[in-house]
Image (tube, rainbow, N blue to C red):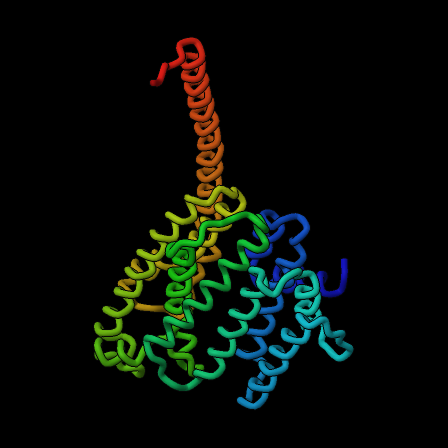
Length: 323
């Protein structure tokens, strides 16, 4: 195991058991370490921006450096002055065969998300900015998921493709809102603040709860659209990753609804035993659907093949005379 691989395993295991197990169990065998590198690098980069780097200049310089490493890595540069965490990024890109790959999209879009989070600190954002933010994140996650799981498979690319991630991001913003706002990250568009009459200094009133309720419904609809896409995927491992991803955030929505749309600073439900049981149940359900679906397709193909054979035999035995 290389240095960057060892660090990737360690960071991912400590940060997210679900992400670690998803990579180990579902990623293509030759891409497991790179999948962990991808998660661990951006987990580290996000923590650098959110926690360790205190000044605006430090954060700006960090992002400029990371973007430079990405660009130079795709140009084949050799680095001698990078940190062990940055080595994960360099090794990851070194294993990419194309700048048009899903991995390249994952890396550039995720870095754009981190850059946006840094640049909007302490200011209100518009609906347009929030939609672009969510779109880049959704594209990044789906391109990364389908790069590491079933690499090369012709996944359908329809409007529903990113909806599960869109719903998850809405839920994620609601989950972290009570912690983000004191840190200058306000994921309530300025138009919504005006329309609902929300006061950032008082998030216990009905106007804010009404907005949370509407966002929860929006996330639910996105999840429903996302489930339709996930159900259409023929790669079993990718379907499993999709339903597990949804389960993780669905428990947060359930908690928000139970609380009457009053947000909390912590949601331990996402780590609770019931969530893991739900993931196991969904895994079994998807496995059964996949197996029975393949069996049914085999039966139907056999029936169609036999019917076609009979028609050809009839035509051969009794040819149709044409003028």
